[in-house]
Length: 486
Ligand code: BG6
Image 1 (cartoon, rainbow, N blue to C red):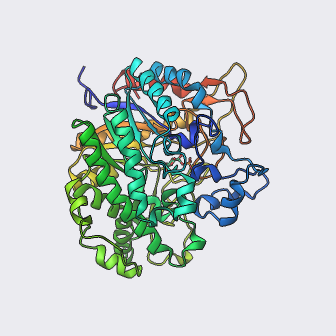
Image 2: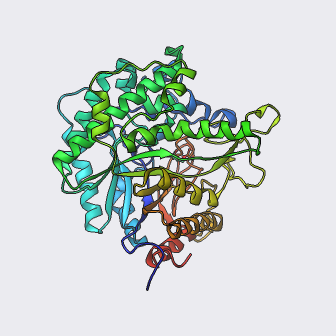
Image 3: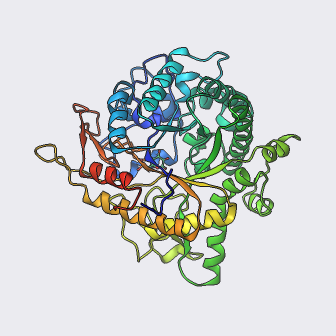
């Protein structure tokens, strides 16, 4: 049967080590920057995401105290570390062609600056990749998904320090060489543009240490650009057939009105994200860089060879997360702000519904995003994340009727189809959180994205039993029909 989606389209799901693995004290793993986030049900709800945006010194110090009474959900995840066989079997049952996951840097180099890798950590991912291979599932692996070693943040000051390039490239080269026969698709940094939004997990920078925080963010990003390029170089040395992609959080921005000031503001705001793909996909800093950085009073410290390194190793494909869109106004003072994990502090769009967490749901925006990215770069695109965080109710008889999730995903997949018909080259789709896990921004367990329910609450209590939701069979059918039956 002829289908809109290409025959070899990579359908699957995505997770990150810091949200699923748990076992943070097993196999020699070190603490990562994500391991310092707490969940406290007594904390006002509005503050749950605040720590994600701005980490404090006090919290980092407290988190290193082995006797800290606080609960750190990302150290426990949903115990994928011990359940990976069962979880991968469920992914296979849905028919996954690809599984997007990440390698926890701290399992391989627990502090980050060691010269030799931790064999126990490497062996764990061998087991995971072998299990995926057994089921015919292709891994797509992120190397840094908000989980750099905490030690590199506290002792070296994070990515502002150029030494981080060397540590990262050692980590990257180690895993490229080790898994050269098991992994073909690699993503050096998850949502590399989100340094603007949450610098601690992105570049290991505590804002209190940097009176000029914009300088620290862009300097960190510059070092990550070099690291990404050098990672591609190292990857090709291990496996010339490997493909390296960049990954950004793509939040479509639209002008709030046709006021020319709103339009110009939207262009500027959208560029703040596209800047990252511009550098990584084209291999050079775009023309608007000088003005953009000057407006922020940022002066990058660079070395003579940097330009050439970035130019020599542009990415092969562009991957991105898409959850929402938002409006932009040059005069936001009297307008209602949009809430959620927004990278821009956008304006509420009155035409769009929102999720329980305030994220504005805009499926058609995904078609626009795909067209914009393909028009701009003409490189293959991969939708690395998309999904609905919602509260699910487990009813008697292990029933979870998540029709709201099915409807969100269906609406978005329909728009991918439209984009493919528009002529856009999309080669895969991994919905976010194929299995329930800890939320990145709020550290809740009850913000669920999965096709698979995990019996665990916000404080980690529960049997951890895996239960199929209604969406499980729905997605299985989507994959089996290659996107025809939605
Ligand atoms: C993306 C991240 O920004 O959004 C994921 O790459 C994250 O790690 C996802 O989980 C959804 O966000 P949240 O805060 O709902 O978990």
